[in-house]
Image (cartoon, rainbow, N blue to C red; front, side, top):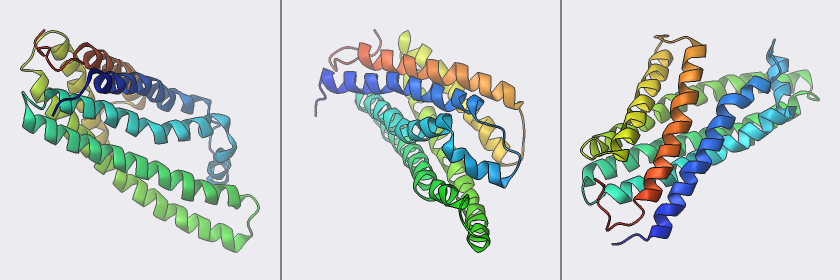
Length: 229
């Protein structure tokens, strides 16, 4: 089976576009109004920054998964196990994140829209449903972190055996695994970095890493070219 240059360049473009969605996910919350209670949380649905971020959040995992597919297909001949495990890890991450955001957009946000004009009995049902939503969201969040770590680690093992740009890209994948591990530990009750440190480290590592993946996919879009170049 042969994949064309167009396929790899398409996945490279997806990775580059994911830089934009990553930045939107990181920085748009800075424009959110502060929340002082449950009513404020429900009212957030009307904020423009929240609306833009919500749809970017849904698009984002599919862009990154496309880039992961490109990586997996490009390394399949030299590291078939890493290609399969890495792609499965990113698939687990992407579909959990997409399902998580679909639940937000088409269930939770509908409750938010209803809340302002609902009677007290309906509001109480929304509060109860929100508790269930929060529990499901947290469980899916931990699972997507696990898949993201598996996907990145698998590609790292393949990339470290190569040279130049590939190894530099691997360094950013390692950094992504380290950051994800801190988020997983935080979910388990181990709060290692401060929120500010975690946010700025994420803002530095993830966009640059995805840009490098895009450059790597574009550079090695010809399957006849050695990955050690």
